[in-house]
Each structure stands twice: as structure tokens, then as C-alpha cells.
Length: 344
Ligand SMILES: [Mn+2]
Image (cartoon, rainbow, N blue to C red; front, top):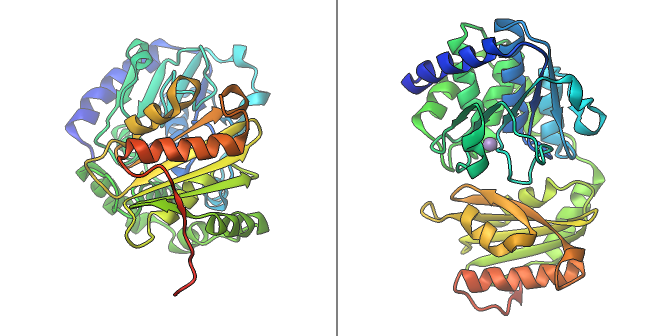
């Protein structure tokens, strides 16, 4: 389950790690998803077991979704919040499932020493001493699993379970972008996984706020042609926004979905499409402009913008403005119509 590229890149990675003594910080992106969490756990395992380094795994934002909390539990991993870190005590920093300069992680002006990611490459990443960015991979976890194998390390039942879930959720059960390598790693780890634990991650207990937000999203549906939009006012964790966007894309007749939600000072946004030839990440950056931060892949993208910083001034104003602007960018009528779900 080792691609030729990984075999070569691993030697380079190993050489860099050997050259850099001292403690390592492995950082996920903010509000980490299973791909980011599992990639961080895998990289920490490599640094600890194959290179005998001390490692702290940390994240920014919130681990919001119940599925993601279960993933952390299954791995039994220790995760620190970035706000509690003593940054000076880490000589080395690795960033997984993200890149510097994207605004979706805690490394504002600091350049990491190592980057593993599968999003389109950013300019700042070219300055990173070791970066392995493979945009054809469906999941960063796939790449990390290959590195774990390159080290000759085995996967525990729990690790196999978490990797399988990460690949599955990141590719939406292989219904979204993925490569042969994702399939190879998935097929190899699936027989090692704990199916009950996997079921527990996939169907976790959910807090009441989840249903409250879902209800709100369904009450606020709008559309213009094959674009479906929904806005959430008060969310208690930003991860609900991409989750609703995924759900809305399943509505018959829709090819684009857009969801927004207000959290603290920011408006979080998520964009999804069924069109495999689209560039949702680029569209997202055009949509948010210079005031926002965002990006993504071909069929999925996300970002945020501080609403007080915009001409709209209010969250609701910005929500309407962005939905109309998106409709225009997609060459659809900017006057979105409310969707009535009641059967006629
Ligand atoms: Mn990812």
C-alpha cells in the first residue's frame, strides 16, 4: 500500500526529521475534521515511534461534530488546544490537512517545517522545508497511512478504524474525489477495523442543538435554479455549516449548495457541487474577496469572513449579499426564492 512517490518522499522526510532534534508540534486545521485529526494522530505516531521524538498534537477552534469527537475517542488520543500551547517550547512544527497562509489554522505568520496536505498548493507552502501536497488524493489520511507503512509500523485496531472512517467521510464513501491510493489504503485497513466502533463513530448520539440547527436550516431554504441556499443564525460550532451544505446537495434537482452560519464574530460558509469539473475552491475565494479567508477542492469549499468588517455590517446582510453574489457568479438569477417543502 505504498506508492512510488511516497517511497521517495519518505526518505526526504526522514532525513529532515533526523536533522531536526527537539520537540514537535503537530497541528491540525481549525475545527478539525476526521481527516485532519487522523492525519495528526498518524504523523504523531511516526515521529514518536520511528524517530523517538516528543510530540504534542494540537488544534484550533472547536471539535464540534459528534462524529469527530467519537473519532478522537476511538483513537484515545491526547489533543491540546492551541490556546494552551507554549509555542516557544516547540522547535519543530508540522501542519496536516492544511497549508500556511490559508487562514484556517493557528500558524498566522509562522512557517511550519513540515506540511502534509491534499488541497491546492499555496504560495507560502513553497517555502516550507518539507511539504508533501498531493491534490489528487481524496484524503490526507491516505498519504499519512502510506508514511506509517513506509516506517514499517503496524496499525492498531483503533487506528485502522479511525483511518477507515477518515477516508470514508472525506470522500463521502468514495462518491467524491478520490485516487487509487485512497482505495488501496482503505481496502487494506478495512479488515483490521473494529466495525462496532466504526458504527459508533458514524451514528453518534447528537445534542439537541444539532436538531435545532437542522430545523432552522430547513425553515430557511432558498433557491435559484439548481442552487440551494440556507442560512443559520446562532450556531454553537462551525462544523454544522458544511454538514448542512452536504445534506442540501442531496435535494432533487440541485447541483450547488451553499450554507452559512454565524459563530462569534465570523460568518462561516460552505459550498458544495455535484459537478466534478467545477472549481469550488476558486469560486469560494472569488466569493469572499480579500476580506474573507477560504479555499477548498473542486467539489467542496469553505471559509469565513468577519461580518462587521464588510459593507453589509450585519451577519444577515452579509448572508443575503453572499447568496446573491454566488448566484450571479454561477450565472443564476440573484433573486433567490424561498423553497416550500410542503408537498403540493
Ligand atoms: Mn482533508
